[in-house]
Image 1 (cartoon, rainbow, N blue to C red):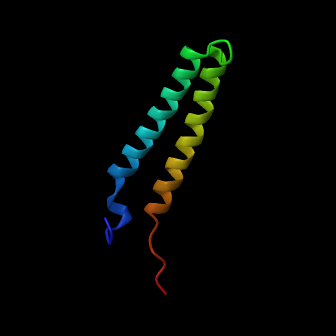
Image 2 (cartoon, rainbow, N blue to C red):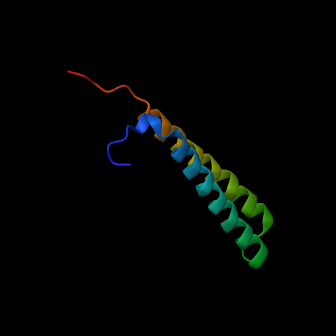
Image 3 (tube, rainbow, N blue to C red):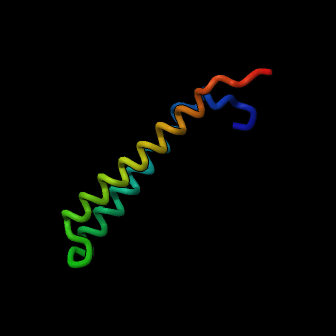
Length: 73
């Protein structure tokens, strides 16, 4: 991976985002299923939606930065 251009790594970014979201959803599921008295379902749905928005913003920021044109002097 050393020396590869970041413009060609879209698959890795998408895979990373998907795995990140799956880990978040899994954590919310465990919280709702194992500790329902401390982490009720409406709270879990709210947490998942907020974290999904945060992760999506991070993903779009990564894609924006990775596809910027280099500044040549």
